Length: 286
Image (cartoon, rainbow, N blue to C red; front, side, top):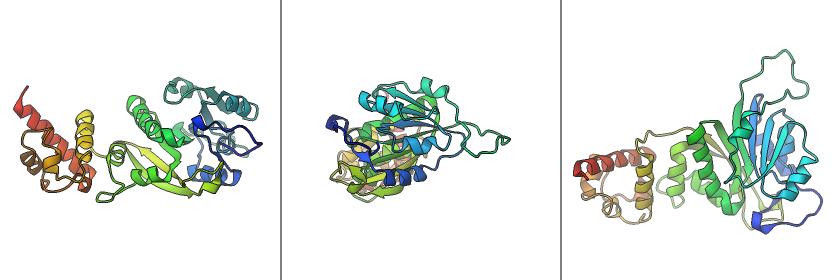
């Protein structure tokens, strides 16, 4: 979202418009390369869209505010395609498949074009950042299309995404996103980087897609993780007893001390635990 002439802010869309100075910093952190094709979530008035477009990247910009769609369409170059819609409900893949990056100004016309690399960028509405993050994982599981996502969100959410075991921010979001991607914090932005200024800091994170730990049953993994962290201050033996009849034995089979708490387990340990829960259920029968 960009800063330009004053306009009515639509609070229901969580609109905070990024200043031009900070937009350039975010675009530099995204680091567009030849061959990139971007799907941008919430372009607003093009603060990030337009600097990215100058690289020659093809951009599919998905914006829910129809007034902003019309405004950006009047300013955007030919390599930007803008559609109006809710990104959580829009099938973006058919639109992306036909996009081709252009050569940036000054590029060697004899250079061999690079293969397309599909990427996600966006300034996510604070109230929808978690659903959008999980939507990105869903797209990746279904289509295997995207290399990474560079997104801006509330700093507290970024803290949870990059949290380590045994810290207060480590929890369900950390684990479930961490199973499908490696996440790195790139940049922190103060409230003054936006108009109107939010009451909180923001962060830019890079999400590099790819399963980090092998899990045979992702549905059971999610079930075990949610159950364990719903009682994070209890021992694992107590937290999991509603899932298996002999939680201590299952934990010992996974090589985990039953007296430990859920917040102390890293991803490989959780994966081993889920394997043993599945084995115990198979042994117990229907």
